[in-house]
Amino acid sequence: MAVTGDKKLDKSTPDAEWKKLLSSEEYHVIRQKGTEPPGSGKYNKFDSEGTFVCAACQAPLYGSNTKFNSGCGWPAFYDNLPDTVDRHTDVSMGMKRVEITCKNCGGHLGHVFEGEGFKNPIDERHCVNSVSIKFKPKS
Image 1 (cartoon, helix red, strand yellow):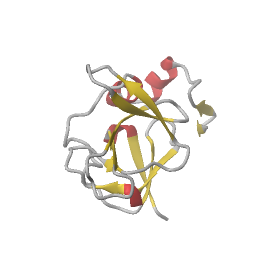
Image 2 (cartoon, helix red, strand yellow):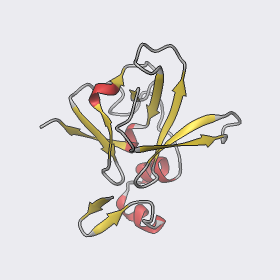
Image 3 (cartoon, helix red, strand yellow):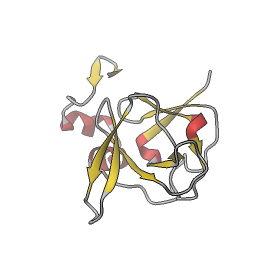
Image 4 (cartoon, helix red, strand yellow):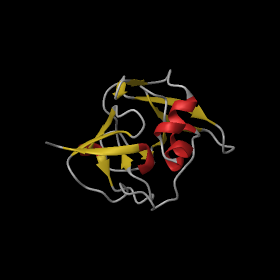
């Protein structure tokens, strides 16, 4: 569980607290399962060594070594750090997709797509909103 000051941030954090802690855009994407416009996120074409953490609770989610350029308009990773991301069936757009959320706080990250033919070890693309993550450089 992440802590901000003396506040514990996890799945038990009330919605009213998230509204205070997150910007309106972060709240819309992370808590209301929104999506940032393609190509608009700061991490789409970002390439530095480090770790991507949840923008809401700061839990580590992805290593930069699994990030790749998919051309989809959002940051793409082929795998998350162990035991950090939950997967859920999402039928909100009239089709079956796999939503990914932060295991610690339940914040919406994006969706996973499988079998697209990307040359990565597991042929997955975690399509993640830049708003949902923050970058911590390798020290």
